[in-house]
Amino acid sequence: MLMVLFPEGCKEGAAEGMNLCLSVLVPSLFPFMAAAGLAVKLGLCRFGGKRLPLMPVMLLSLIGGYPVGARAAAEMYRSGQLSEAQAKTAVYCFVCAGPGFLLGFVGGMYGGEAVGLIIYTAQALSVILLTVGTNILFRNKETTAAAPGFTPLPFGTALVEATHDAAVSMVSIGGLAVLFGAFGGILDSVIPNEEVRRYLVSSLEVCTAVRLLGSCPIEFCAFAAGFGGVCVHFQIFAALGGLKINKLLFFFIRILQGLLTALLSHVGLRLFVRETAVFSTAEVGKSGFFGGSVLSGAALLTVAVCFLLSLRNQHGR
Image 1 (cartoon, helix red, strand yellow):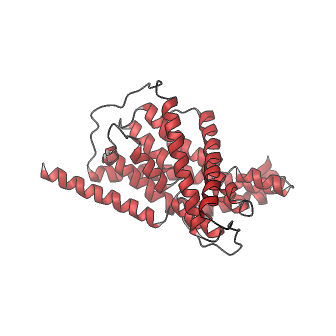
Image 2: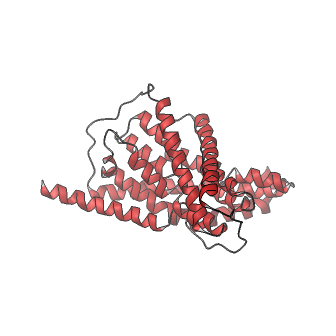
Image 3: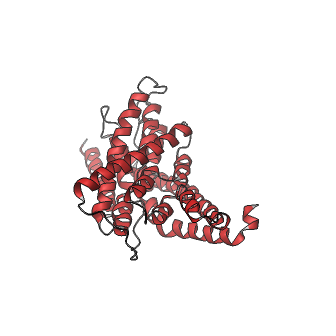
């Protein structure tokens, strides 16, 4: 009904969502999702062993951004490399903005990468704290053990399957971006109060949230990065496949992560930034919102090196 009553707002919002999908989401997310899937199918994510099985997934999430970690965890669960409780812990906790987004976009808005680095570090610390707490919560709730005898796929097969799976996921993620963009455009037409509209739209999509909250204290942007936005939450749900999680608990942990990220960012700003950064009205160049930094390239290079080493080991046997 709202789409019929406010067609222009819906159209403009959908167009903005499509632009976000084509210019930001696909270039920055698709390579990482394909690389993460490839690493899982080749068995390269097992270097954490029994003591730290979630470490590879955490690294993928911190470097790749939303929803790379959740997708990798779901894939490792389906292939038997993670138990159900381990995979759920990863999905609940490993929801992170990429370094390109925080250092490039957020840091650029506030006049330097130092602010983005502080928020990124605060986010990483919040992930570690939440992982410890969630592990304690699920310690006695193990329902499905990891299946033994995982067999890595040949490289050609793994590459084709990883690319196909990433493409299918990108269709869902892109569709959600367009849908939430259209909904945000309708809200712009429906809600006259600018402040109410700002905070409501900010809860839906993280990129829009950071732009709208740029004139607020930095801690607001830190919360938005930790929370992720409802659109990101649905993107993660779409990547889970058959892995079932408690969505209310997931949402509660997102709020908790947002608060932790904001609090730790506040402490970091007090300790390392003498003068409070002020929002810059200068145009900020396009950065990968979810990845796209030097670290992103390093992660892809690491996957390639691990693959070459695995080939060497196979030929040496």
